[in-house]
Image (cartoon, rainbow, N blue to C red; front, side):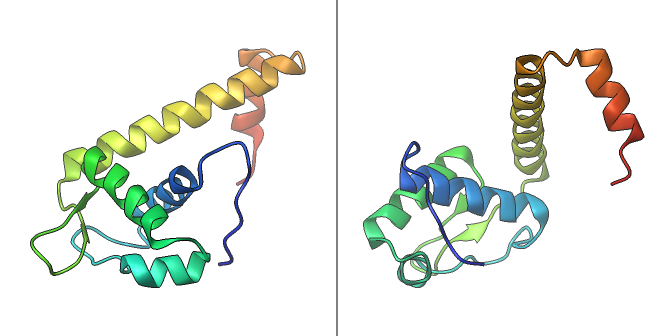
Length: 119
């Protein structure tokens, strides 16, 4: 998938968020190796330092680990993965409620719309 970045969020955070989503989606399952800094920098057309910063952020969250010089791997700690998924869903839910409120949609209406949705 092509990479595109917005101006209002640092690029390294956008890279970290995309990788986090791919990890939580299962694109990179627990224990799997992720692309190298250089490979991802080329793919995203960014400076390798930017990718390194994104990886450091994901390591700080516990999603990635780097045992020695073998590369980086997705954590196998199910508790960490569950916590990250819960935090991501909470953030998305809060954002949806905020946006719905901006157009005068109540939580109750929103819940009804979600229950009706055929996804």
